[in-house]
Amino acid sequence: MRLVGVVMAGIEKWPPYRAGVAILLIAAAVRVALLFATGRYRELEASEIINVARSLAESGIFGDPYALPTGPTAHANPAYPFLLSLLLRWTGPGGPGILAIHLTGAFLSSLGYALLPWTGRQLGLGVTAGVLAGCAGAVLPFRLWVETGGTIEVTLAGCVLMLIAALCVRYLSGGWQSIGFAAAFGFACGAATLVYAGFLPCGIAVLALTAALRRRARAFAAAAVAAGCVFAVIAPWMFRNYQALGSPVLRSNLGLELAVSNRDGVGPDSELNMKLPGFVHPHSLRSEAELVRTLGEVEYNRRRSDEARDWIRGNPVRFGSLTARRALYFWFNPTGSLFKTLFFCGLTAAGIAGWILAGRRRLPAAAIVAVIWMTLPLPHYVVHVSLRHRYPMDWTFYLGAAYLATAVIGRITGTRGCGARMEEPVSLRG
Image (cartoon, rainbow, N blue to C red):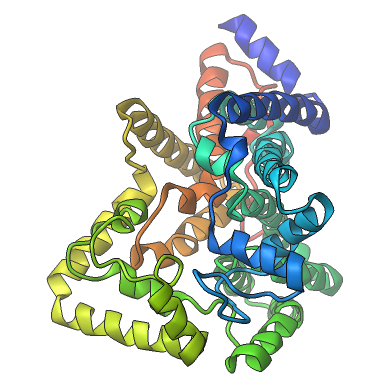
């Protein structure tokens, strides 16, 4: 064990980018090999994001996410469909385009693991914890459908969330004292919101937390500047939606998701719910797509929202039970494989324990991760859940579990060099 401690102390001195490049190559090799071995590269899931990307590539319209052309949409976050549309314009819509989208998913998921050594250092957990977390994720492709599909934005969102978390730590630890940094933080949070709308509550919560902790005029001024910059970034997208759809929304599909998730016979799993009789969604039913085209997306979703509220009011106990099951499903990820289920349950438990330890050592990153955990899952407690929905914050569990492992090994071996910053608590109140 002493040798293990010495090795891990040596890893702590590595430049994070060197470990990141190695992890990127390993993770990409594993995922690309499995992509070709399974034959998944030949087909592409017809998701709403893919439909929008094709509409952008072919006609330049951000729209038509459903079974029929329905016109402009705000069903999807804008950034990832734009990225895929560029790929489709370059490669064409056939086999090369399909392969390019799959490879994009594999690259982005691999990049997420490669960023963990850097993220570990930025969050104060150490390069060693980041390397362990990155290596574990790289060689365990348990999210293969998500990580090689390329059809949803969560792989990109995971990478973006790491960058935002690092900025959040700097902002909470003193960046609020610089109005320039506060503005940059706001612009970054706004850009992240265009990748994944669920990041917006997280950014707002960090601004509120900093202002509440500092209670100084400059902290409130910095929060106001940052909030203004967030709005400046997302305002053009909201203005576009006001012009195209009649409402300045970030996403238009909440009413639809509430309706399909809260009705008789459904459970917490979205994939299972889609196979149930009576699943009414414009992506799979042409009649519903016609209704969207007739009513418009905003009005259609308002009616579906009313439908969901009527069911919830009439079934409060059932809704409470569904909410509890969805929360459990989100956090502990039951799958069809007992081994995978046990792995994710253990990962979640170890990750939580690791971040509790970081909190006891007064690392500001623990507060940021707590904010992420409190805000990001909220929509998925009231709408059905898929394994992909937790993916943007999966890295927090890998990193927390690795931090716990390095702390245990450091205590056993008496090695302080392993994750030295772990022994240097930083007060949140500075």
